Image 1 (spheres, rainbow, N blue to C red):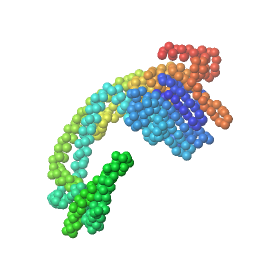
Image 2 (cartoon, rainbow, N blue to C red):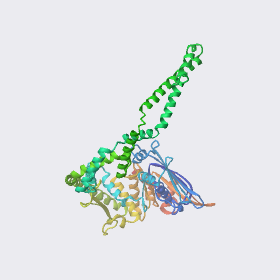
Image 3 (cartoon, one colour):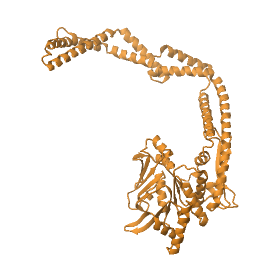
Image 4 (cartoon, one colour):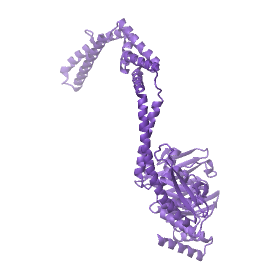
Length: 556
């Protein structure tokens, strides 16, 4: 739920702070006062593209912020947690647009991409009107309308499972088809390469040990000299390091009881002497292993040369030769059974496709039932929304030519006729902006589903009045029950149904125009409704406004 909106230097607004409550909030004001600017700001905060024209004249940058409270079961909260952006169930969006064209966005104080902002925005705000947030034209939204009721969740799971089985088998088949069958010559060559590697190739550890020994032997004379020098330093008689340290420790040891520092020195000398003894043992062991035989060096060079020759032949590093061997063995094994495995895969694929088509047909049947229910319910609401004689239809067609897909093999199209005698056509081609908003409202009410917790209606009252406007207001309030809806409206018949009414006003101030918002209470609201009814405030218009407000209050 949206809790506040803050705007700085956006469009004609220099500074604006608006607190929003749950339920139905209507935004009213004179034409051109800036009501739709609020909707535009929400659009930018939910990922819409912006340009430098959005920045108030004379300002360096525009800054927008909005806060949301999210219930524990909110999809938006789940998204925040999945993306490590959660902050105790709250959500703060912030976006800046600079005059140099740079735009930046933050979620809960952490910088994010515009794509991330749009993903979260889809779960927070749904704007209905002539803008990019109109979801009805999207295939994803059309399927969601049919599937979100949960009435055929099992059928959806069955289709997804069958699709994954088919795709796994198809991917294996493609991989096998990419491996051409081996002719006799190719098979003989592979068998020769396998035998050669089995006889000559060393493992990565064996190769590493061989290289280490070769480096040691290559520097054998120098290494022998250094090892012998180290041994003499440690064990020479009488001044070798180990012997000298032992003698010093023996002399100090009897006096340790007299002074703790003497005791500590004796202990350290004894430890150093022991370390020297161990070092001497290691040096002598290395001397014992050192083989300076020219034959051994020659043998190592031959073995290493073989490994490097094999590596060049197979275009890998010597340490990777064993992996090459495994790959060649696998290629030979697959070649021997390629045709058999392909035949088996073809049979499995056919069975998997039959299972998928059966599941897709079952899902299609349930979707068709849901489509009929939704079509009837929306059509029944259209006369109340100023579209007498209109019709709405969700067409679901099973397309057997479609490849297996996780959401099934259905094609969905929304058809609408907003007026009697006009044949239905694709919704986005035949409906005006105002009609789209009202049809979207009818769908929301009929299906009682919403992709986002906050519904925003712009131009929902275009071309209507009287009882139709009254019905629109009642439907929006119904939709907002337990959630939140915002509506920009010029009609008093819509505004009187709101739980909160916000008036947007524009005034000329030095050095420019200023826009302000006021949450109306009691008499202020009566006066605003009266203005919307007749333009002039009078005792009669105020009485009419009070009557309308009282009547809708009784309907609550």
